[in-house]
Image 1 (tube, rainbow over the protein chains, first blue to last red):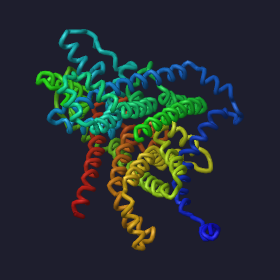
Image 2: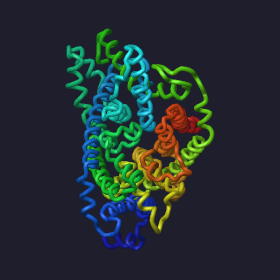
Image 3: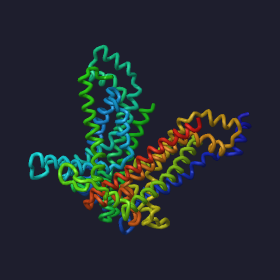
Image 4: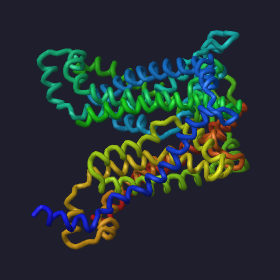
Length: 284
Length: 267
């Protein structure tokens, strides 16, 4: 009986699964093939033979190690800043809403669609050596030199990244907060719990998965960030993506650029995995 | 309401206003002001001019506006086609394959854009595919970076689709192609439109991959803005940035209205 049932299915194989082939071929040709060639160019030197000493020389060089350290420090500090700012804004927008709060949430949300270097350009007008803040301070106090310099250090990059990427924390947090029963908070308040205690014992536990998902996305995006670092253009602040650009375009040292790119891609894929795990826990 | 006392609430609101004002509003306001500023020596700009915008409409800046719009439209349409196709095709796979391939289609969004650009530069500077120095390699770079977002948006739409409509269509004898054109695609249209808006916005602001691959004759807006500010012409850079922001937001807001208008007509 079961053989009879299986027979027609075998006679007409299901070809529906093959519809996925065209986009897969496009992906392979436009993304996977270039990625494989980066790996090949990283290992093969100018002569076409494997050149492991060149790989090791790049990995052991001071510019690479500095860029790796800078990338990690800036990404961790920016993510911490995004979590702090995103949490503070989400708490206010969701639980102490003011007239115009939805409009403010939408304004912050539009930053997701805007180019990241916009913020750096704005910061040069606000905090640059000829910017508003320094102009006001030098005029107001009669100073000879502009007193504010943080923009041209790692702090400038971190502050810009916090501005650009905190919406990625704010959005999932607001979604999580909208699921919290407001009457639970009213009751806790009526029973005499102070706001900070309600935040700690009712709101934060409910928001933790959203904060982890948003935070790991921020970590990924800040490790990959290029525009902000390029536009600040500070000599001491070189991250992995900027070093790849410098090696390939400025120095035409493609082997070194490919070696660094492999490290950067591996780091990003690791963080992507972390984000997927966090997002799946949020969903389930 | 978390804070009960009137004074406490005002304190919290002051903090919120300061945060939103300093962190989010001030940067946008200052670029807008700079794009109209004739001079800016002290704390505030002095003088008002439209000269930066006039310059943006002509010459190299005008070309950059055109290059960005053309790249954005071409890459977004291609990404939408490929993303929608992939999302629809994945439904025919088993759950395990569907998840694995879904992650694979997402991966380009996780890889740093500079590395995507470097890969295209290395891959297409040699035979059999010579694209280096063409417009096509810029569009291809944008396509790779935004296709994952198109795929993600359309997949999310498909996941929320109630299965009843398609099943009813099949039971009534609709062929797969007819069902796709008349039932499935209209139902996911809002997600497709949203995916196009997001893709276009991302393409308009793309910098990392573009600086790796762009030919001299196809300079996009972000590359042109970097060139201007790097030379110290920050006011023209600000005007071009405002044009970029204006185009992006107009399109996003316009597309957001579109499904609502269509739904209104249908009802």
